Length: 184
Image 1 (cartoon, rainbow, N blue to C red):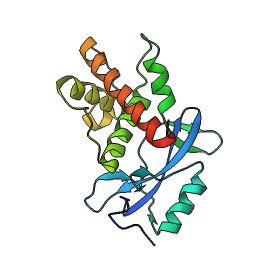
Image 2: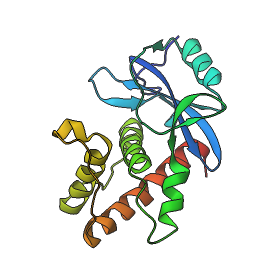
Image 3: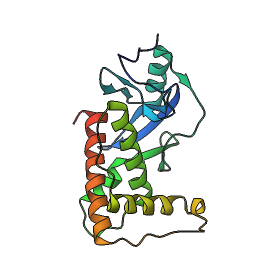
Image 4: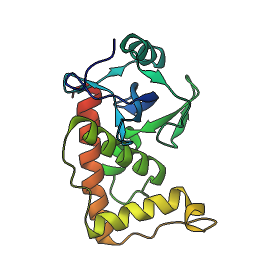
């Protein structure tokens, strides 16, 4: 029995997405909704989250959510224990607390994108647009997939305005993900 739209939002087809936050890897169910928007499964206004991939797959099965083989968001690091790609919120959080450290471009893009999907799924508004924010996002995107822009490689050079916008947005994203994935 799958939840009705009144009970929650859920991808028509989806798959587990592992997220490292506060030293633990949590799993949510990610995919596209009936409008083709990336979203995560929710019930009762909260993300459906499990402590293991098997746990989120069991939840998906019990709710009748269909699994897909589509690639989950993120190009994070492989989690040695589970051999899965993990979106690393902790890496971004560490960057935020150490001024002068290089921007972790892979983790930063993955966290930003996941926060967009979480906010959409929960009906929350995000303040991640604007001139400097868009420039920062474009640089993260180019650093992660330079071939999409016809480049062999791209290493961002950040202006102070871009870094200010990036720190604000990543801080909000980390807060959103910590709250919705762990209840902190």
